[in-house]
Image (cartoon, helix red, strand yellow):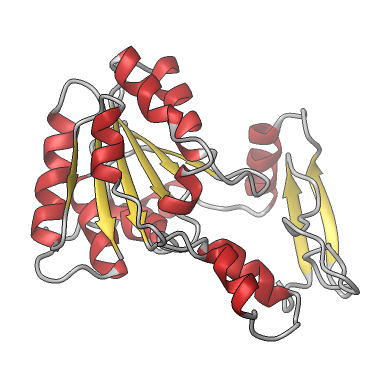
Length: 257
């Protein structure tokens, strides 16, 4: 956000970082940025945005037409890549689905890739709450039993709240969980780098590693009653996604990275 000079807040407070670093400000906006509260938390956000659009003489229909130009990509094939995984999700995401996104390091390109997918809702990680993915997916599925929930998470995040899988099985919730298994607490590695103290030593590096022993998420999921599969190609990933969306109940797809 260093180059942003004007920031408009709609139902939000000024952004701050997840963690505090010694000698660094927690405020994300630069000192040169002017912050404009358009609507404070609890006020009429939609009315505020409509008033802003009217004041700027924006053509709402033209804006919607520009968004509508995005199209679904075809089903990808071949080796697994982060771009390929994002394209696969965009290709098969069901209409009116609810996406729960806690793929903080592996899923950064997924939201942009789904611009051409049918209308859906997107629930993101809030306030750096690691492990929110499975519980948030449970809540979404309980609140909207007639909608398909797609949950993105990872092995590090899921180790905080794995019992969410058992709840999905117990309640028969329509949740398809995509678990990116990178065998590390990658987000913690990023936060350590933010301290500016150099590379971690052997003892610190062990804290970021969850590969000794490696976690078998297919067995862990099945042990809690959720059918699971491990995929090693984009072809298999697309097939598993489609099967999950068509299933009556929860499923899990482990994607080794």
